[in-house]
Amino acid sequence: MQINQTQINHNCGKHFRFCFEHGSEDYLFVLFKCDCTVYTKNGYLKARSGDFAVFDRNLKQEYFCEDVDFIHDYIRFIPTTDLEKSILSRIKLHHLFTSFDTTEINSILQLGVMEFYSNNQYKNEMMDHLVQALLIKISECSMNLFSQENSEMYVKFLNFRIDLHSNPQKYSSITSAANTLLISKPYFQSLYKSYFGITFMQDVISARIQKAKQLLRFTQKPIYDIAFSCGYSNTEHFTRQFKKETSLSPTAYRTKQK
Image (tube, rainbow, N blue to C red):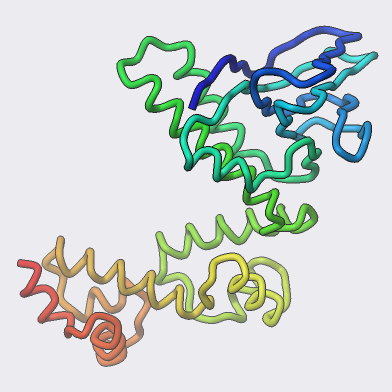
């Protein structure tokens, strides 16, 4: 990836107008931090703070504001590998993305700018990976994997799943899980499968077995204690499920790992 320029929280002041009438030598990603007007394939659209866009190098690149300080994050780049070109091909260019959670994008941008202005030995390699990660995140939005209205719900589910895999013993029923997110049980099941490609209960079992493997391998806890720590009410159920998932009993797995 060739990175030509990048900045975060770049303040251009009032009455700012950026315009390359016939495009430029590079692609441009912009995360807007103020209300402004943006040129897209659908004409001029109003953008708000938190909206973002990726501009095609071959089309007019234009955005402007009048009455407020124009603040934005941006990266000017040129993909150089087949992988990078493939990722970029999945992104809607000259499209204004609105109402998406930009927490991850902000984090990647901040790391990217730190690397860009650093003198680190592996600076170029880090920038390649960070910009690729940024483009992948944008491509998820671009492919409508999650609708704009559903973006906030996806983040809630993602945080929920992270906690599930950290503390699988807390989760045992679909009803309680749905209540945690304040939605109905059928809607919860439908969204979970669509977001992660696995049912909630399958994911609970997977998280419990992974935790059990760690405890069997790295502690001397008795089997009944491990079963309880992973959310099982009795050793027999734990042993049956562990063997079904791994083809080994908990004791055999522990012996094999040693």
